[in-house]
Amino acid sequence: MKIVVIDGQGGRLGKLLVEGVKARLPKAEVWALGTNSIATATMLKAGADCGATGENAHAILGEVTPAMAQAVGGCRAKKFLVPMNSCGVVIAGVQDQPLPGYVAQAVEQMVRELEK
Image 1: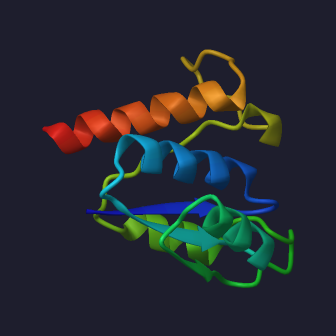
Image 2 (image 1 turned 90 degrees about the vertical axis):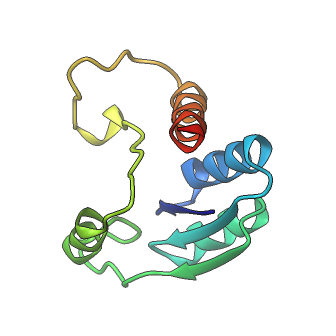
């Protein structure tokens, strides 16, 4: 099974996700897709099997561009999103907690989905 982790900026969230997925699903092939080379390198150091750096975001360096969002949104794969209230986006119904808590929930939901 292939799991793709997408992250930008310094890759901290992606690093946590790669580590969590590798711990819970050691046979999974984890692909790290960074919006910049720092994020990609961070996820590779965390144990991703392969990595690639996406479109160069020139408006906000290291963030997801509209083209990237469209590619991910149009993909038929199941998507697991980690809420980031620090970006000025509030997601109703999401309990505020530290980032590692969100990552643990995302990985747990991936495991449950794959067990179906």
